[in-house]
Length: 215
Image (tube, rainbow, N blue to C red; front, side, top):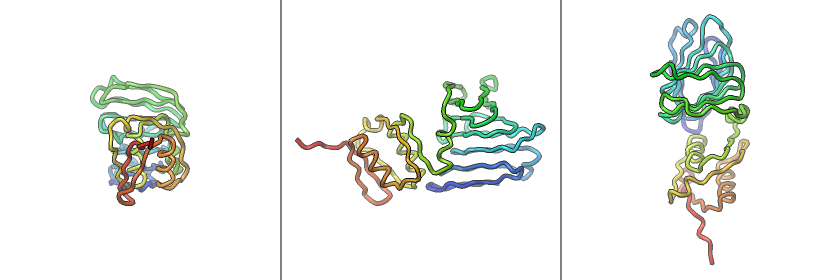
């Protein structure tokens, strides 16, 4: 069974064991018909999980080169980048390990997050778990995010194409929170905050360029 969301689409999925999965845009989960016997899911993209507790049957998620194992908890996995997986815990305890090198593993608890680059855990830090799952409530949270990554988030969120006219602009960072805002409002805010010029070739094709100030 495969369940997939398109760009601009987010949905909630009820699994056979009563666990819930919130799929972000352009993401998918795949599991077998015997899921209640073997709780194993493959994730592509990003999802937030609320796992029904079952001490005898661990809940396992494969994403990129990592495997996340839990008994009953809530957590977020972002595997939108093929070489990088970010796992953050909202409640309970989670074990994350490399599928290639199982010795590379980390145990996370509430408000902890790990980033795996390829098979290696490179960053372990404390974070605000509410911000990490804000997307499930139609809230975009940007925390010192590069404009390049912000553009990727917005492309999936609103099903648009965003293009930069120069490479330096991509590396500028932005912090902000957008609660159920329209694309135009978000882009206008970015334009003002970063002093940029944003053009719409079409409603779904956006160009970001430096603002050429007049003398």
